[in-house]
Amino acid sequence: MIFEELNLIEPILKALNQEGYTSPTPIQEQSIPVLLQGKDLLGCAQTGTGKTAAFSIPILQKLYKTDHRKGIKALILTPTRELAIQIGESFEAYGRYTGLKHAVIYGGVGQKSQTDALNNGVQILIATPGRLLDLISQGYVSLKSLDFFVLDEADRMLDMGFIHDIRRILKLLPTRRQTLFFSATMPPEIESLANSMLMNPVKVEVTPASSTVDTISQFVYFVEKKEKKDLLLHLLKDNSIESVLVFTRTKYGADKLARILTKSGVRAEAIHGNKSQNARQRALTEFKNHTLRVLIATDIAARGIDVDQLSHVINYELPNIPETYVHRIGRTGRAGHEGIAISFCESDELPYLKDIQKLIGKNIPVVKEHPFVTDEGVKAQETKTEEIKAKAKENKVYRGSRANGDYWRRKKQAPKGENKKK
Image (tube, one colour):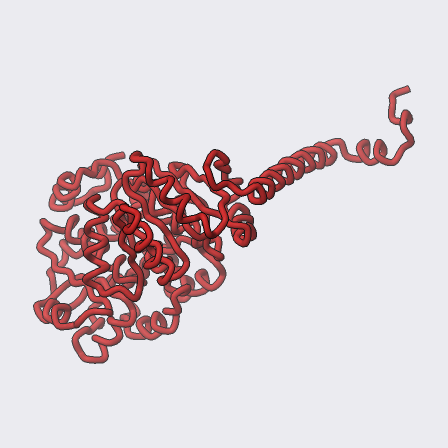
């Protein structure tokens, strides 16, 4: 399928063609017709599936066809400033020929430039919850004329403690509206929130919840904590690693690793919540432009970084929440491109690896050929592999026994030789 088959207007098709987009991704192909019909939508999709275009394109088209009345017509609520900025860039790209105006508001920076944009009049508002509530309380934002509401990264919203802010915002929205709800995972609390917001939604699920996309090759390196930095420097000697996003668990760890790499001749920048907005945006811009090879991030940036053709993601420290692993490595292998995800695993992190493999339903291959390999980790992974094979064999025998019914049970119970046909 091509975008022309989705009944899109010429200004949007022209913008998509200028961006080099010809064919929609599965979530775009399924979502755009539904949203153009005015239906609510529940989207279960991982990062990198193209969901921003899936909701921004139909919103732009429907607003373009209205009389452009004053007031904010569409609100996109998102958890992080990085993601808000990127969604704003998408609306800018796809809507450049529509004449529609948008604004992006988020905390951590002065509000004047944001309030100036609001005062000039916008139809589309992309916001993080805290700054939105702040500007509403100051009288800069009114949601009374809203026609479209998008809650993006709903599960991440809950992880970051935004549930109370979301409920406050929901009370300020018109009852009659079109609601779009997106989440990478669907635990019970997310389903409950979705049910309270949506009216007879169409559900679009392009990949199983908590799965990793097929275009990502995953590997694990067993290494002790004190040698992780040496292993990272060893890997970065490979020039085929063009751009790499490295994840640490703490802000301090990100800063420390950036200093170690830079001191060793590998320029690296850290990005996390304690960095100023200007510093974060500068590092992101350089990383997107591929003038910065190594970016080190904490999990707050796990879904807030969108880089074309990012070749590698490295989990310098494994996350203790398995779903976070999926979101981290989802930064690579996007939009059909191939990617590589490498995880460093020390002895204390073996339980985390076990949980991750259980969640994604696969055993991550071990790379043994490196100077810092630990026997303990390799043995643990080999034992796990043998356990999986044994369980699969046991299940196969069990399924066969079910097929044979009583004959199998008689064979198990009868003395040796009595099962033979006489």
